[in-house]
Image (cartoon, rainbow over all chains, first blue to last red; front, side, top):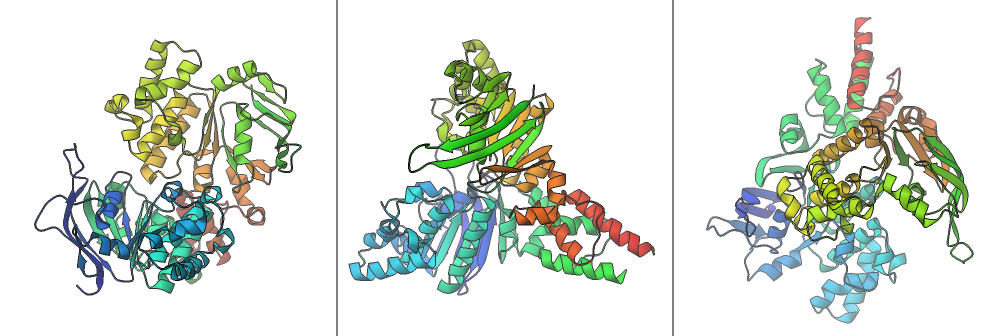
Length: 282
Length: 287
């Protein structure tokens, strides 16, 4: 399929010494240019899927299994090509630094790929600028705040010029203000660089801004759809160990009380506007 | 016996070029058995304040009365150890501090340190491992084999196992999924119901308004408010002036107020928000 940057079919993975698969026969697509969010509680198999997409883990053997990224089928031979197309921002900002300074760290991926020095300098400067960290170019990563560390991690990924960025709980260790800033930054670079974002999270407010949501529970895909479709069903979200975003809770509870609220309302602003008009009409 | 801070100052690195004022003239009193939240921006002094509760930091000026003892700049270590037995601190991301070979040993460590017998420490550890919702079979495992959420619980159990009168928590739910967050907050709330005092540092105003009786708000080392969450969040201008976040239901209520809704009191929970909206719509519909 041309319009999907990721196609996953019949994907399963079982950790060594465990009986039950952590990921169980999962199939999904990620449309090119979309923000797709995979939600599920801690231990639902979310991060395992991220690692399977990047070839860090290899799926259980099954002839029907397929992982295709930007037209390339993932296998041992193509793994390195795929890693040029996929960047992962991990949860813990402290666990992803190798360089002694911010610019060294950002250059690491380029050095690995033997990019010529002059070109490397230009790229490093550009991506550090893009994430708003030029002032900290020469700083040591360990003295940065959690949010700044994630910015550096994102710069390191942008330097490689990927097509797809996977966010593996990348904002869950940040405070609310830090979270919002990182999400805004990722939206900005998504637009500027024409990227697809695959975000793995249990932050339901983040999920409500996605184009597509996949709900995972105990390794199985429970549902997929737009936020409106997914958040209609509170029991589905609860069974996945998650909570609805506040305005969906309010919307659903008002409907239960017999107040008509149209289903297509998919953000807080629309809900406020609608209730305002309802209030004026009465 | 309540907890009393009297004109507490704390200065980092006094007499050096790096000297900074961590806390300035902090005074308050917390009733025994209450659930108190400490709120404020990153760098406002929340963690500095928390480290005064068990004498990890000593006030540069002023005094603290806690657990029948007084802490000043001169308090000797022997007294501090007595205090630390009664005041348990759970730091941010406490799972980074696990170190023992097994979960059971790790949870017993604090109790043993405070002079519990081996037998008693084990009994307490087993009880609290269960209470924080860890399956029995994790006891003999290495803490490093567990998931992040489970490691967090091990670290929390390690402090709760010696059942301190005062439990201080720094962002205990950060990074946990919604169900995990609710479970551990229920544990803390129950701990309060058993007669203990709980002090919570949090950025999450929803959690604060849900669980805390009282909140202390810090700004650049000064305490700028000591009131119930309801009082704090009903003063919209004040909240805005100090760039504080609001509980999500209040935020939505505020947007509705702007477009003509009237609320008798500022809703802090989804239930009260939905109730207020329906009331308003019904009141008008009836006219």
